Image (tube, rainbow, N blue to C red; front, top):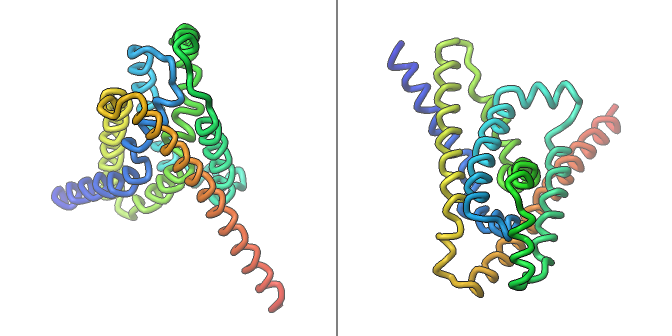
Length: 233
């Protein structure tokens, strides 16, 4: 039984790690983090990286454990979550894409205005949700949570414990990617970083539109099925 529980623990860890890390993709989100924190000091960005990683962990853990029950309680479907989240992602991406290049004076003004208190207010929205942890990862976490259940309590607990450890590992990677994002992009230079940030914003915009489309497509398919069933009756 002990080996079986250990196997369930390992499967839960690998399942969460393999299912959520590619969707979260902290390496691709790090440039967006830099763009949204323009003017923040290194200490403030470190604070933000720590808070974002912590917020992401609790958000995905809640989605994994009770997300399906909450959606059912409020009568909200996953396609609706995708449409709403996709709109927020697209709006933030558009803001990044159309932002003007800051001058030396505006950088100084931004640095003075981006205080630690302001960073705390923005740590969850929009930096954690929906930029770092969007509707796609939340939907995936809900799906993962459903698959962790098992009639045997010991196996279910083993899978859940492994899944929680997997979330901790992903949170650590998110923290490291955001904490050292500026150093990772430094070899590109100022012009290269600007181009990379614009390209990342455009990709994020496309991702937001794709999320919206997926939600609308699922809603359309559901309506079509309902119409077919009513026609047959």
